[in-house]
Length: 197
Image 1 (cartoon, rainbow, N blue to C red):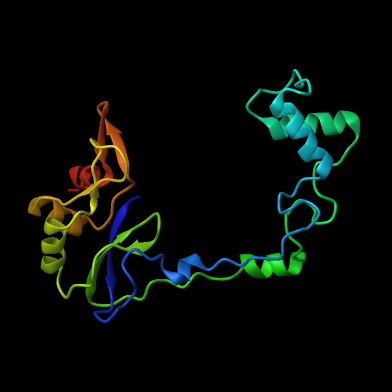
Image 2 (image 1 turned 180 degrees about the vertical axis):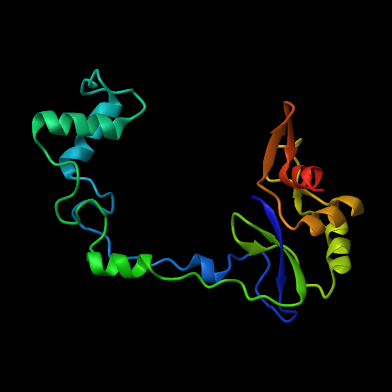
């Protein structure tokens, strides 16, 4: 859950906390009724269930954490298909032409402009309103929780000091949620501004 300062139009009106539509477009195809969207044959699913329940011996050549690899080894030995025959292992009924079309769909970038806005990078959503100046964004960041706090459990957010907010706006983005530096867990924003010139 990194953070990023985006330059957006002053009248940009995308809801705070909602993933940008241009990133969230996902094409869903009808599910395969034979494999129930899993992509695996009925015998492969049954074999995996028996393996994970302990009702069937585990192949000695496979680590215990990799149950689908174990199914593939047993399928090779016993002569059954791992993938669903109807959907070819995709879990849905789309043709290859439709899959290629969906894969080729371009993302629609966030429009650019003169405004200043703080975004969360994992959910690709705005965290703050749009401000006319970087100073107004810094003010918002100083008075509103936006940074992750590594000393607390759960998704706890805290506001920052003015100096940290100013440095972060100058840097523009963090590398992630948390970083381990010298054996200590620190938030990604602090890490980003510490390495900035």
